[in-house]
Length: 121
Image (cartoon, rainbow, N blue to C red; front, top):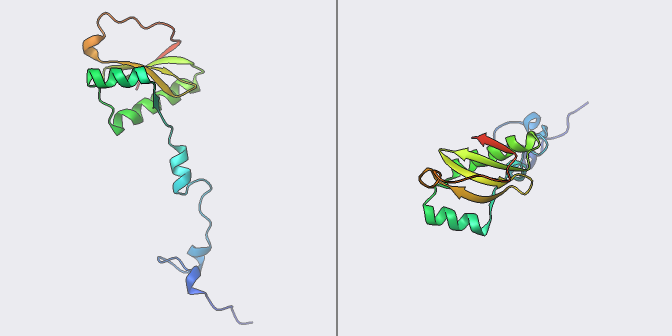
């Protein structure tokens, strides 16, 4: 019995038919990776505080903040304060929204109310 000819259009540029036929892991395509990244939103008030106080919101800070929110959510928290590099972000965990941000220079007389957890991220 003769084998069917291989269609070059179905081949991966790296390998042969076995590699081309291998299915990719579910949800691991580019859109799956993007969806897996938790997002962080900022309220208008938080945006004003970040801008006025010159608070760092680099991609690394946002990643650590999102990670802290996810850890708080895993413990059932609703409203939390997440500390990243000494900056306190008061967040609504269920909405993944930063409510306000306080840098170390303004934290001295600050009182955090209506939170049920704290995370050091």
